[in-house]
Length: 65
Image 1: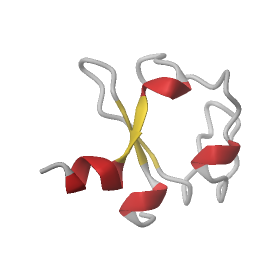
Image 2: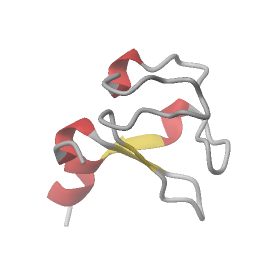
Image 3: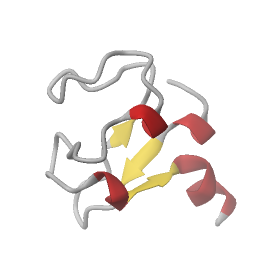
């Protein structure tokens, strides 16, 4: 898994999917190695369908604790 500052967690109410750039998103046709900033704005969470702007940087959520 990539460093927390590179990973983004879905904010969907029951989801929690983590976008890891080292894995990409096969279902969404996002290749491995794609940073979250380069994921298209119309991309959706592969688990719950939430929009990209529903995701929060994992580093921010760790710092908030």
